[in-house]
Image (cartoon, rainbow, N blue to C red; front, side, top):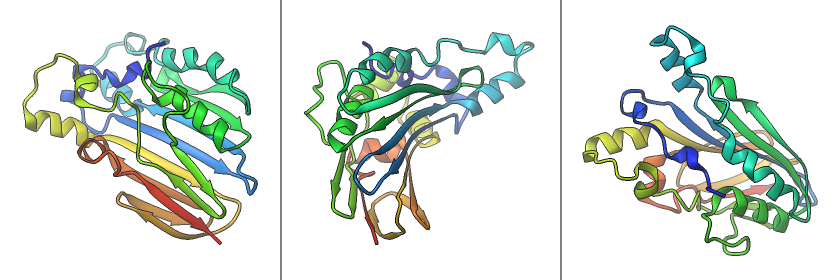
Amino acid sequence: MKRLSLFGITLALLFFTGCVTIFEKYKINADGSGTMEYIIDMSELYEMMGAFSDSTEEIESSDMDVTLREALPELENIPGITKVELTGDVTNYVAGIRFDFKDVKALNNALAILLEDEEGTAASVNYVEFKGKTFIRNGQASQQFNKEDLFGDEEMDEESTKMIMESMKYNISVEFRKPVKKVTSLANYTVENNSVTVEATFAEILDNPEFMKTTIKTK
């Protein structure tokens, strides 16, 4: 299975900014179980392309979620992962997948399917940790999160590369059953009662793989 081929973004990103946002959305229960949704949102690109197209049919992409559709049966085979389903709206360039997890082990095994490369193993990275009232999302994103895999053989100057990387966003949101007490992260974040949202650009993550590492303590 080819992991996250959508990171091979087209050259349209040279001309459109703010076109891609990756979301990780977590809902955490007190016992460490919960729900996770992974979303790739290119709706802004869809809207911009539509402005230059005579027919929206020319830019609709029924194959946009092909990678997530391929991941679905693998996720269903992981012990502790249930209710796997595709989400989003691919006709508007939004693809997603959602599932319930029994515990942190099941969650990390699922994230390994979504984020690691073909040589990776489910046990090689702890993306998420639970320690009592503390939730930790370690900084690792996809193993393909590097310039070589993102751009392939395309030759671009440093300024253009920086512009694209700064226009692409990676957001993580975590919702708890209890109010949030403290957050530690290099990335920008907002707190609203029981939830935390962390925001970063691809440029920030490429400069520092641990940039999005976030520790959240609840009351």
